[in-house]
Image (tube, rainbow over all chains, first blue to last red):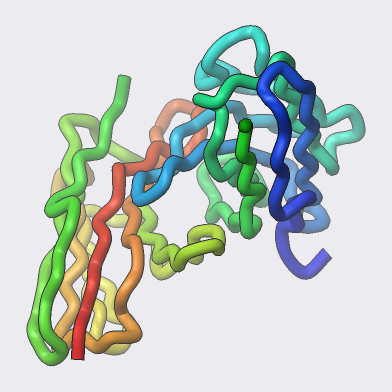
Length: 113
Length: 112
């Protein structure tokens, strides 16, 4: 596609529920990143994929968070047993490869009530 | 852990004033990127600096990469209300397989 697409743009869920956030990267981009951003703060790294594999998942806060990219394109960030502290904007970015310019999607605003 | 410190965190100025935002680290980066983000949107890339000492200009914005590739600055001349937003610096580590590291951002407000 023309840019990085994230769906849904907004998600409200109840505490304890499971959510999935989707990212469609720019076509041909092998690197994909997930970040989490609180209001007025810089993005906080969660996980980085190179192709289908997670090259670095050191930013995932705990085992309730998991991400997949089975075919090396679309990625899904999965959050189990959501907590109110998970509320944030989740940003996805893609790039041609390591060290090249990253382009961001518009983000998914997750609100856990 | 590599960190990028951005300063100031908040900046509120009048239209026409000049300002500088700083991005500092104790680590060396292969490149450094500056982004601007508006509410409800993802960060949009402004510039990438790669060479130590490099200076790039984008209209009224001047970006500089430190000689040692550990720090960078963004200078805006004659700020306008349209410059309002969150400015983020992000460093690309030398270590392969490591994602961009972001600073906490500078929130700029320019009033007319």
